[in-house]
Length: 600
View 1 (cartoon, helix red, strand yellow):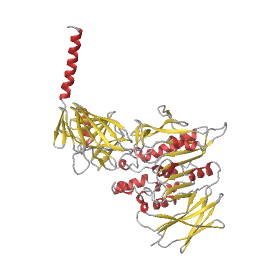
View 2 (cartoon, helix red, strand yellow; view 1 turned 30 degrees about the horizontal axis):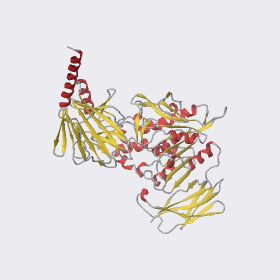
View 3 (cartoon, rainbow, N blue to C red; view 1 turned 90 degrees about the horizontal axis):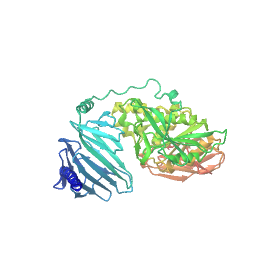
View 4 (cartoon, rainbow, N blue to C red; view 1 turned 60 degrees about the horizontal axis):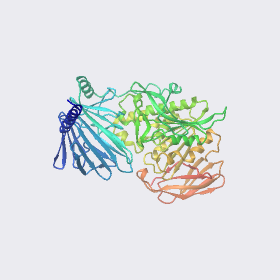
């Protein structure tokens, strides 16, 4: 046989094998849907482009209910239909709309999905598993009962002898107590590829999956004996590891060793920054705790180093700053995912999110204190939203901090937007969450000065919950409540000038914010007294005439009169239900009185 004929025979064999494998995939229309058939699995794509069914060895893996979430689909405020469904070749179906597109490619034992977000806003693509899918396995071979809140990137899901292995997830979470949800987040204009490998479980895997699926729920974890957190242990500087993959100007990326998660060591990502420090001098420091959807932010650290502070910003959810807002990549050695830990209540206490987030922030404090350039007696903490919630707990647990600034966040969760997340857990579990993780339990032990920064209509943390919170600590308090202050990271939560002035006044001998010394009401006349090293140039009476949800009340600012000897007065208009006074100094910094509710 000549070389040419040999090559031709090889090519024919290869092409023949490829053709045979392609022939194993059959896509056929059935009414408005498309059915895909191979020897290993059967799939369906609905008329709206949703992937409505995946059967392996006759076992359905996706939920197929027409009355609720079904199969796999895009979601952005609502389910996103993909009505333009085409078949460009023998093994591909493409579903598109103005907002998103999905390219479903089929091989005999593998599915490859190319998912595209065509909008300028983040969205997710989810798979809702059938309730009969009761066990999953990560890439290390560890099994978990489904549904569960997990941080796996690679996962294998079992039903009978069949299994499906998925790659590319950013989040795994339970829905309605019955369904495991697999999710991938897509940033604006982002495309991601997901693979599903069809497999057959080994006898050992079948045995393990059945054991996990049939396991009774564990007994509720017991209350701690003594303090929840071991401050003596957490006060030791943690071991530090390099994070060379992450580079930002003016800051250093690192991992530090966190508390164990499920018996294994964890690594916490952080950005660390130092200003220029003269030989022999030490600078003050700040620990920065991000909020929901966030991570460690380098820009936040640079904000404080530019002010002459050392600063450390840590991730509190086991992630690294790679990905998009709200969809950061999980680290393989990260702790539990956030937020709130409402679905983790039956886990051991030391594996739950709030425990880890508080412990890791205290360890970040210990690390910052250990640096030779930093004065360990001049360090504060500030956090935004969920980070403000954590700051309230941290302030009551770690007395080494000289000051604390919760932004938006506070305690008394049953009086705020997250109340239903607690009460939906059932009476005993709700009481347990409040007993362990509500800041109201810890705030009474906070003795350092605290600045509370928020808005009148914050969507999450209401003024009544805030008031109950700021009345608890032993230390002095200053309030800064601006009308309709936006909620978020960046400018709204990180940059209020009041935070810098407050920190400078305690950690750098700067001029303090004005201090409200007393307040009262005499009929329709309200008043407050104050002391200030800087001129107070304006005062406002903030009022609402509304009742009902705090977030929806309409507020207006009315003039108040500055009088001699540090006194401000104003007259209440008819119909007011709640009021408070704001004072502005010549730096445009605001301090507020407590709000007062009037009987109507």
